[in-house]
Length: 323
Image (cartoon, rainbow, N blue to C red; front, side):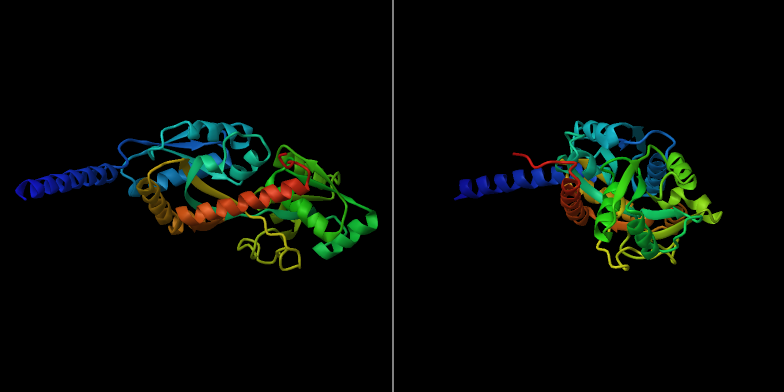
């Protein structure tokens, strides 16, 4: 009997030590600086956004962040690099809507399935803009003009981008014929709009702030679910009767298999930053809105976005069913 009790005691002691060691390991996280991968070039909007986030998270994280730029391929380079790193919570990746778009278009071998979600932090919207010299002042007037003309030229930022998907869906639901013109950057697209070379442009409102203030550009509608705080007078296409809600978003992910404790630790720090008045002011100044989702909810959101964009891209003929 004594031997049996002794054996049982030793087994319990072993597992207690094992659990204690595990808890201690997680309690020590992070053990070293955290590499924060940015899939954009230095100095751009996405790069500045992440570096601001990293700075604001410093009071809540016991190790510093080390931003690393891995640009190229619409996020493909950053995804490949991050997915190759150890899943120990010491490498994270800032993502946008391209997190689902680039893999769906076959431009990246890595995608959402190769990562664990940490948190979504913000959303933004695209808007449909026209020149104030144009004869139409509302979306309804534009639709009537487009049908009478027999079609319009519509500027977007590339093929298969979120703004292209949103524009094509809206064009179809509105019953107008559109020739989509892809642009590399905001300056070229704005010059074409102002010069009358295209009829309409889908863009992020942050790219249009100066032109709106100068009275050169008019916004006909937004692809957000609700009216945008920065432009409360601009209707959403949803309220105009079109089932087109296509937000763009920003979040943070980690290599697949990262311990849940690490994910929760970083998510909690991000939540505190998103709640800060200073950060929300920064978002508003850049036409973004705080929209925090924890790891679980962000994973569900990404899954929904993945299905949505794959469906829409198939309708556009940009991806085909695998046989």
